[in-house]
Each structure stands twice: as structure tokens, then as C-alpha cells.
Image 1 (spheres, rainbow over the protein chains, first blue to last red):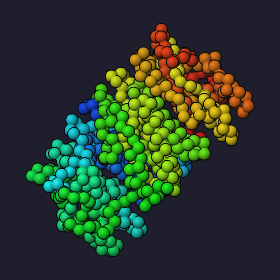
Image 2 (cartoon, each protein chain N blue to C red; image 1 turned 180 degrees about the vertical axis):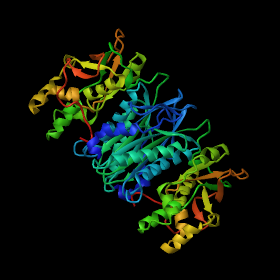
Image 3 (spheres, rainbow over the protein chains, first blue to last red; image 1 turned 90 degrees about the vertical axis):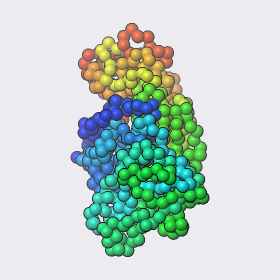
Image 4 (tube, chains in turn yellow, cyan; image 1 turned 60 degrees about the vertical axis):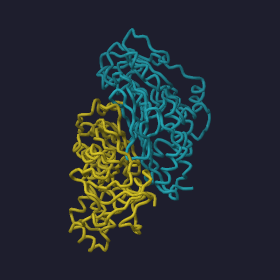
Length: 312
Length: 312
């Protein structure tokens, strides 16, 4: 059955019937607005949009996969502020000939990813469009913590990462060359494994800055360097290359560090911690902050691509 | 200059430089997430998406007009819960050959509409897309009030409306027939005049249900009737037809009540009040709630179009 047959309200009713309210949902979908708990008197909010052909392909990812990725991109932003995600709102633009099942499975993927952190879909909108587009807004709760921004890194701080780097980019390359294996890399692209809980952990441990790695580690650390007016040096020996990634890189003729240092979409968290502060379990040191500007690798300018700009 | 030339981050930087923080903005654009005040421990949230060719045309509306309309659609949803809007997040999908000036003016329109209620743009995202798409999320503050939902109408309640009905639909018809006048109707389509402040006013006055008229009065009252499990009768003599609308309707061969009863996009507020409660200034009675189901006009089934479904 296509969405043209159910109509806008028919599809919305079918999707809403599949949703489960989360603990922060005071009023869920079905009204002009949702009401979400914001117990400390503040709410963290972030928006990320996925466009078919640019952020996902229906022949590479199932509808549920796309839902997981769309939710992950947004939930990771909330975690990177040091907050716990509470709610998602989803604006879905779909070609009228799209199957209803696709939209339902997308919603299931979004819900399942959100449920990992106790969040849920509380509202949304739907429109026909020639271009399948998913715009998600995530809300979060700082639980009394000061938000961890990009501009707080200090010379002498340690840079550390929680989560995976390069896996999703490797999976993307594998798929773009027409392969479907190694499964581990392809799955990493389809459903990123994001260490959401490490965002609030880092905030409580005194992280001075934090960002989620969505556009590539060096590019995203560049945002911290610019906002904090510091230089950042990354140590390449801090990144062990997993065997499967090394083998895939050799087979595809790619430098695996290109994936690790410049690949996005794993939504690892990168943060800076003051010197002497023990890194929380799950965090690995990858470099240091110094006086200066820009991001270097082993004190040298990185000559490869640093990350992804959706217009270039 | 096109967006392909500035790139994603270049355009974001240009737009962010134009934004002014509002009173609820604790942390504005430029980080992974924004932080917005939610003083009563709850936040109202709503999302609405506008797709070029379906919700707006660039030859009918300026970029600033589209910004005003996109903001209005979202801010009206917040008002219809009885809340005061505090913040907008904007996901913008643009063809790379779009002019930078268009995106900047869009942002100015969004900001100007939001500023009318003290809200501001606190975050967003941007992507290239073949289809120009604007997904906006609005946040709001209930200021201690109970949210006014669709499901609270009771038999015996009075239905009242604040704001204009049919003006935007008339302007839409005028434009779709290739005309640019009457200016008053065309401008009503381009920049709806929404009585945002009447949402919280109605909440304080004890409104039992409320909705913003975005898809057509009868269709939107149908949502209240369904959610409240009541019948609603609208009195057609409650809607004086303004002279300019009557003249335009005659010239175009349209029944003006089609615009008034089934036209959306003015974002009037419709609410139900208990019998005997004085209607606040700015609200006009238009009908009554009774036991039963569905929406009638002068106790008869309305045989015209009731509203707008984006897939039909």
C-alpha cells in the first residue's frame, strides 16, 4: 500500500499507533504540540536532517536502518552536550508512491534507537515531496550539569574519544564500491553504535569541551580548536586499526587512517579533559591541546581530506 | 553567490551571524545542541515542514515571506497549546544553486516572525537537496498553565475563534489564478497574521480545548470533535465576509465560505470555552459543542471540501 492511498492523516495515525511514550513524555503525539519534561528548567535541543541520495540510499539501508541512523545523528548531539536525550520530533517528507511499510519501519528504527537511551518520538509532521527527507529534532535533559560546549578546551588538556572511529566510513566505502561485506563494517555504517551514556559521564568528570564526530574527527576537532582558540595535535599511534578494517582498506586501496581521521557517521564522542583528571572508562586518549591554532596529526598538517561538507 | 560556492559551513556562519538571541536562549547556535530555558520544568515542542511546490512557491512569495510563514505555522502550534514560544530550530535543505541571499532572507523572515513573540532561532542544520525544504521545530513555555489539548471539549461549550479565517486561502486562490491583487488577500497568504498571544490568554480563561486552524476550520474542528468525542455545530452567520473577500470571490467564481470554512494557513486559533465563561477580547463565538460526533454547519453536513490533505 502506498502513502498516496492512506493519505497524510491515515499514515500519521498508523505511525502514532506504533509509538510508546518514554518516561519524559508528558503529552505525546496527536495534538498541536507535545509536552516533554525538562526537570532542571532547561532543555537541550538539536536538529539534523537526512536527505535521500546524500545521507542514505534505500538500496544500501533498510528503512529501519535509516531510522536508527537518523535518530543516532540527533541523539549523539544531545549526548555531546553532556545531556540525556528525552524526546524526538520527526518531520518526514515522502514521495507519495512510497510504501506505507517503509515509513512504518523507519519510525520503528527511530523509536528503537531512541529507546536505547530512554527517549521516544513525541511528535512530528509529514508532507509529500519528490525527495525523501527526514528532519529530526532531539531534546535532552542536562540533569543539573553545565552544558559541555565546544569552546572550553584549554592548552594542556588531554583529548580523548569514546566510541568507534572509521567503521561507518569504511562501511560506506565498501558499499560504494558495490560490495556488501565485511558485514561488520557495513553494519557499522547502517547502524552506528553510539556511546550516548558517555556524554553525561564526561560532563560529570569535568570535560572542558565535547563534540560528536559526525563529519570526520579532524574536521570536528577543528570546530573545538576554533571555538576554544587552541591548537590540537592528534597522535596517529592512538588509533589501532582493527584487522577487518586493515584488510578491507588493503583490498580497496584505501589508507585506513583516512577512514579513522576523516570519516564521519560513527558519532563517537570527542572531548577534552584537564591534565591529571582520570579518563572515565570507555574513553581513550588520542592527543593533546596546546597554545596555537588548527589541528595537526603527529605535529604535521594532515594532507588528506579532513571531513565532509554536504555542498562540495 | 550560490550556496555551492560558500559551502555548508560558510552558509551556516553567514546565517548565524544574523541571528539575535532571545530571552529564553541560554546557549544559541554554534554547538552540538542549543540550551533553552524551560522555567516550569516542561517544554512544549512541535514540528512543521514546508516543501517547495507544495507549501510555497518562490514566484509567489519572497524568501522573507516563506520564513514568516514557516515560523508562523510552528509558533501557532505552540500558542494553540496555551504556551508562549521560546525558540525555533530550522533544518534547511537547499539546491546548491540557490542564492545565498535567498537563504539569508529566509532566516531573516523566520527570525522576524519569532521575534514578535520573543522567540529566536537557536539552532539548525543544513543539507543540499534537489527539493527546497524547510523543517522547523518550535519550543514553548507553558508558564505554569495546564496544556490545552484537543480532547477536552464538553457538550455545551461555546466554540470561538481568534484571528482571521479564509484570508490566506483567498490569497492562495488569487495567486493560483495568476493575479497579484487584492493585495490584502495576497499579503494574508504570504504573511499570516497569527494571534499568538491569544493562546495563553485562552488557557488562562479556562479553554477546554484548542487547535490552530492550519488545514481548514471544519477539518481542524473535526480533530477536536474526534479527540473530545463530541459533535460540533458551526453557525455560518458567525462569519461576516469582508468586502474585499466577497468581491474577489465573486470575480473568481468561488463561494467565500469555502475559503472561510475550509481554507487553512491563516493559523487562527479555535478553542472551546465552558458555557457562561466570558470570551476574552479578540475571541468571537462561532458555534457550539453538543453530544454526538462530527462537525456540521447550521446543523447540516458540509458538502464542500473540508480541508487540505497533503497527499490527495
